[in-house]
Length: 518
Image (cartoon, rainbow, N blue to C red; front, side):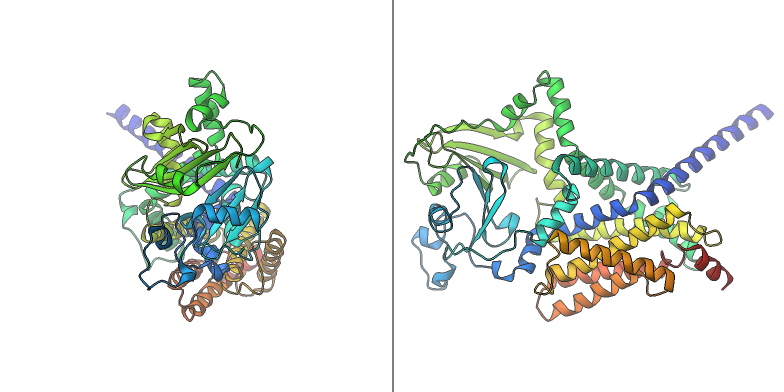
């Protein structure tokens, strides 16, 4: 009997040791990488509304009918309800205007519709690796005055690659996705009474217990979403490595062969000028390729060359997150390559589904809002994690390294809030889409955070909350309901996090001792 009891006690001790180990590593890793994770998660939340961000920054992009689909002018229907200015020119006309009137004479470029970038036509140059964008009014063909450093694209690039060189940035974001996945699941395993964590929220046992309960509660209810975002984010960031593994497994290490099988290859230009089929006619052919096919991007290769090819990229709206590509010979109208991801097995579905799942592009505004509120829950989990540690150490104070990363976390929250206000509301005063301007905003946020800790000013996170709440009230008068919801909910999230426990006042040893005395 004694032996059985001893074995039972040893097992319980071992389980306890494992739980403590999980908890210890979870806290240290979470706090240390918090600033970087906050940058990725906050920009990821705003990237859900990438097109809307661009319209809010440049209101003149909000035009009439701009879809690639046939306009009333093309269909021969004029019901008198639409003004001439709202009737979109044909796709071929827009390309001719871009080349002849706006100097967009590139051989390889892409054209994007409003689903991705906003209510306007965007030409994006891909020739020789040089990036150049042209924004056009699809009704008049006039070039729109737009900054090359739009706030929308800067937010997206921050989320995708942290404004670093493409490969390095994507790998780093992918690694942060793996780290977040580790934090999500170790946080779930590190706590006892997992069942209670789904409903237990003790309101009258002190801030530390309340913060801990809230951390567990939100973490458990957002577990599936957080796991999905971390896994898809990691795979998107590390997709080149995934492709290399697939190439090693199925193509003998030949990555080019893998890409050729999935996306096809384009011929080199022959030289000279050739007559080609109208882009509008090719567009209609592509739409007939699959039932429910919604084209989002047109890739043009070797324009007006005898080797001209046109690739149409889009999604099957009646399928499950399936991206399809079809390429036409623009000279004779024949299909040169079809990428049907439903026939590509697991790899095809993964390539097709990852971006849609991560950015909620397979649904409308309501789905994006669901993603938004789940992301707010994840942000609260992250902030309450630091709060728990600060409350535990109120008598000892943070170590120097913990103090630095905590203040950087606060600065990230404040800088992001200031950038949003100037990026989409007071756009005429400052453009945080510009890297230099964004750097100045970040430096100002860091300076204020350090000063607020030293002089006991309003905390950076509280200030960020009030900035967004006031901004939300201001946009009510502009009629921007969606922007109002985003600003108010994020602002109230930051303010609520400070009611749970201040990241600022508990971070500095001297103030910790004063708070303990009080």
